[in-house]
Length: 298
Image (cartoon, rainbow, N blue to C red; front, side, top):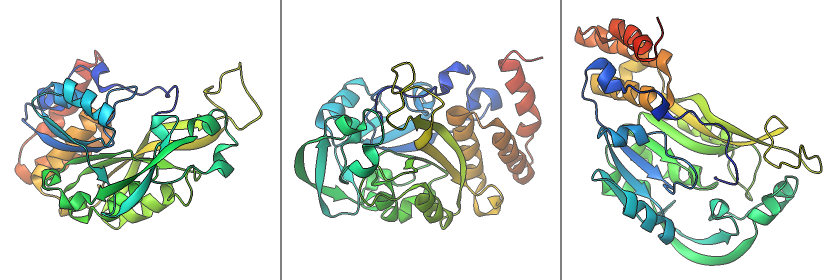
């Protein structure tokens, strides 16, 4: 949900050395990005794509946004127009702010309590759309990083992606803490669902707060700090207390994603320790010194 000014997001480009360059490995990952429209910032995996270390299959049903993605894409990116969901036909609500358009209806009971949202969520038109199950799309097989931002329909899509969840190592999904859409599943629902598939919550990336009306600070409806946390991108990872369920290749790929996309260096070191234990390599002991050196830390 890209509505107005976003919070500060750590950009993977600000850290100059990739996982592959620090470890002398040649890890390549597959990204599936559902709702790939880049409204205001690059996705967290952009650095891996720019370095040629990732293949992307993206979905964007907005034809104008799809055209922009295809115009800018590199040789390892494919973008498709499918609306991902449960395979059924739904009414799509086109809102004044494209970032709020959804197959769910905006919930005025909640949205009217926050500055901006009553206007942004105004439905300008509706159209009937056929959704497609992620599991039925061959191009998504073998996904390592699954990113999803589809305005309240994330759990619906996940319920019809059980084959892909067996492959995925890291999932970044937009979650809400109040029902911005009618009957919308919330963070707790997605968390409980993903735990059934050996995923645990790792971190928010990032959290977004909005001020409850009528209070307004410095005439800025995006002012940070106050008060209600509304939504976030939540990162889920394979349960790192049960790494025996992953292959050596999966452990290494998970480490690469967490390093390059989310700067979760402590978990990366833990994964590399497990990888070394299985393979007899010694990547872990050199990772931390290389990380410090690349950051200019003595």
